[in-house]
Length: 147
Length: 133
Image 1 (cartoon, chains in turn purple, brown):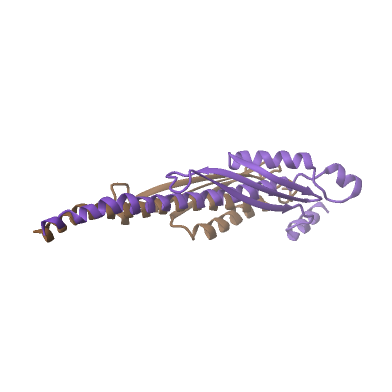
Image 2 (cartoon, helix red, strand yellow; image 1 turned 180 degrees about the horizontal axis):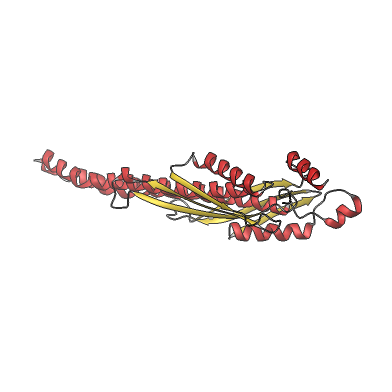
């Protein structure tokens, strides 16, 4: 009977470092990662939307069609990502006509690195410059006041 | 004798396990709420930046914020939106705060932690920004 003494203590001595602590650390790592992933996606979408507003004025004047200034769009893409999510790198981007498509990635260091020291997250977003107005009442009101 | 000893050992170890479990759950809730508040603030600023005037920006931002923040464990979320004079070079600045209640965990921590988030989004340059006054 006396040999059974300390069994519970031994169980916890094994279970806590081998099971409970890694599970707890994994939960914190996974939640942190989910938060960073949503932040990366939001920053990528914001960068694509901002880049899609870099209209080529020369192109509009010469052809009457909406297109993007590729150099300005790329600059805005990079600036927005630096401001919104520092550490993000642009994997690829395409600017065709009035549309911007960008793929980004970010290396995230995990707080407890249970299974891996770092994880690379990826995000993708597309935005398009569209002509038109979204508030006809304002336009009518403005026209009436102008008249 | 052995049975009694096991009970004592359990009494020593169980609080540690319970503390670890509660601490993990509280930390996850805190991180989740923080990420949610940041995402909702960013979404509110983005929605406001697409509005045609300052009043619409305020209401669009608030509606987006409320819709998003409802999915996260945040108490009394508060959002303030400023957009300057709402001219083409201005920015929408959204600042939000909210509290996370972790008093249920009974840890040696404050039961209610206040989080804050901030997002800045430039106004869309080619959009109509309200009728001239």
